[in-house]
Length: 79
Length: 433
Image 1: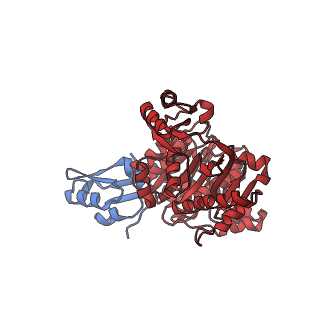
Image 2: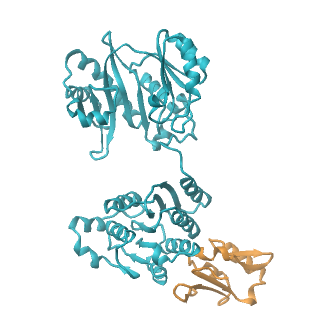
């Protein structure tokens, strides 16, 4: 379930990537990602805390993590 | 922080201001022992940080130690305005010839401490100032330059006192001024300061308040007085609303969203930044608004922290709308606060556009914040609208009037109607540090 302001989508192809799960958990400053036993888990309760820092996008393979701003319909672009 | 009378007397004693012989007792037996040491008639006073002791039966006179013990027993069991006494003060009953008032307070307008002296002591000094202004002497003094006794003398002389009285009172008022500065007091008063039948002067009652922020500078004094570090010594107990505000702030280390004070108005305030809270609160009052609360936000609180504070304010009985206003923010993100306050409205089932009278937080990430506010139809203002103008809009809306429709409010649309000083107030505001 999305937040009120932010939604995050992680491509199915990488959700089982244990290394990515660890990297995303480490990268996100507001704990939107958790390493759930080697799987990427999105912590829905923290979605609206997203500070739009793009660190998760940088940490993941291109195009596999998408951060959507629900209030204007745009997505964070990769750097 | 306020001191109990027995503590204030010890501070006076420390600074060599004469006081009547006294002691602090926490049991009736101790009170009797002190009365025995004092010898002769004594006064027994409840030690509470509230007024109305005499009327409530918290002050009694005793002729003998036995009588003192009995009165002390009664007073120790007597709650006054909900305050349980911190023991009793047992003091010698002085043979009074005349009562005076000696005080030092801080004049916030001149930004200097000032003497207040009256030859009509023992009663409320505000009442004297109103009914007998000619019996009040005043005079400012510097906190930086060496203290000069003549300034105290001048304040006393304004009441018409001369000769021996003037000479003897001057060092007492001077010493009070010195201790006011030395201990970072916000109030130091002796009421009454009395002339005894033998012509000497002694303090019979004293009241002192120390600047709360100065407590770390006076650890030695506070330890000597037995004031615990966890004693807040606030003027009143915190309300459940205020306690909850403190909890919200403490459970999340990110930023500040708390320091809540409860009032009984209909406009909830979510305000802050670089002194902005005080300015905005005053601005709301100036425009005839009735704040439901005071609070402080800043330092980039999380969305959930801002939301929880907003929910607390929104759920306060009597709150019709909230005003979300800050000075120009640099280390707080506009979009994060916008998310927090809107989330609170939505989760409580309110329409943000209806509940938020005005959102005026200019600064970091404001473009992103404004997109969120527009999405939810919340009226917002940028930095070209002064804090005073934003407060006016909020007051007008909560009072039933005001602009309708969402969207931006720019300075050029409203500033033209304002006097130059008010326009400058907006232009020169402090940026959150």
